[in-house]
Image (cartoon, rainbow, N blue to C red; front, side, top):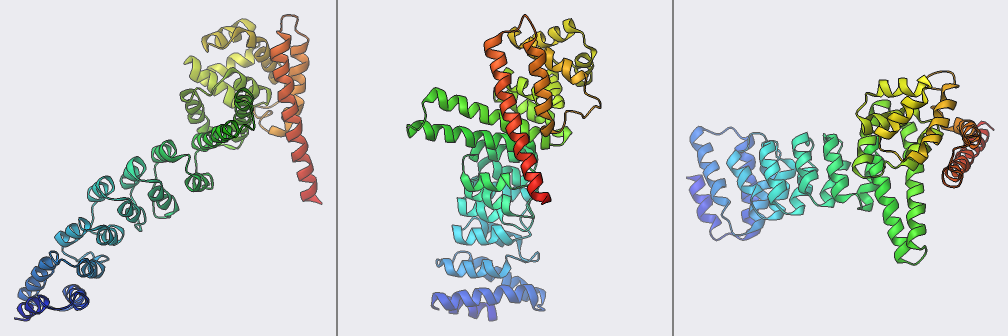
Length: 379
């Protein structure tokens, strides 16, 4: 009888009162001791309220049941298919929505609903993957800000691929301590080339000069990142560079000249299909013919062989497997490589020697900055 009276009253009641009644009914259903028949009547009434023409009524109903795991599932699903404001409330808060239902909301609803899903207290890897695949940048930003989101590496890849140029999103990614080095490098590379385009469009630099400066900056940043990255992330970094056509002979010469032996060995292993341990053994063997065969299999230009040979020769003289791992030691290493290369009668003087000299300049400037910074910090 009470339910019948409520329904009759709602036919003529103002919207604000109907919204209050909808909220009260839902709270009674969830938290009041009701007989089975009464509970059925309240549930039926709430179901009828889904057809109320006023969004405020449905919003009040959604607000009352959104946080409960005892709400009728059909009400939650119906409200999730409602207008954006109503759907977003349920999408963000309801614990009853399955991952499959959330994935469907992400793929078929407006950005506001995608944002709501990204803000959920817990976002599974499957839902995060769906967001990374189809969501707008704003939803991806919310996902990255959510400490309860479990985001797989491939999802981070997709976010970078789709929205890597979005400034706020890029900054959020770069601030993550757990960001894999290959994704960090991809973001920095995209930023560098965006700045290149800006400089060219603004007539600040000629296209050829802008391209050269950008490539050089990206290579320096890539090597610096490789020194800071865990060893097990280097293969993924190399594969990303190969896929992006950024693993150039100049980058490899820079790597070996800076003493980044792990990166160099991993790159040669990927380019040739030879296991990295075997590559390392060949580099340490001192056999010129074997080294040249490996470089040829990697399809590196023959004119670069002398530089790699000189570098491998110098690296063999350094004691300890990790002797070249400190970037500050590159200034001594590259001086030795330059001296060894400069003494070769068969070198191509102009191009390779000029490249090594430029790398030496970069290495010494970096070493000087580190040295002064250490002195200032110790003072």
